[in-house]
Image 1 (tube, helix red, strand yellow):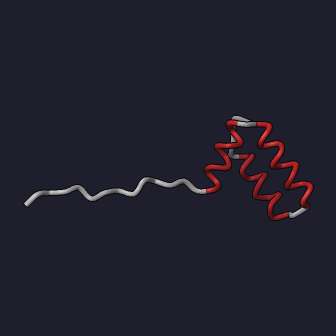
Image 2 (image 1 turned 30 degrees about the vertical axis):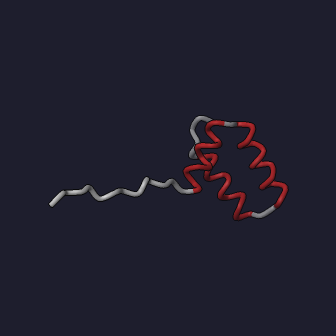
Image 3 (image 1 turned 90 degrees about the horizontal axis):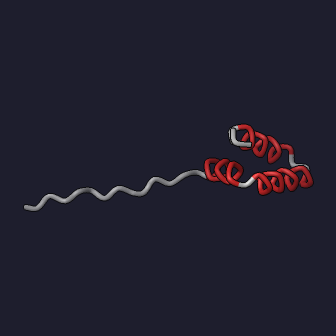
Length: 59
């Protein structure tokens, strides 16, 4: 009998993590996203955007 290793699924990251990382890498992109959220006027989206910006310490 041969022993085989169980294959592991690659870890996936969530949208939140990907957004924060994008904001860290590109300040202009972060500003553009915030501008768009402000223009749309959706309070829930604004709160989410502010949360993501607040946990991106490089900004």
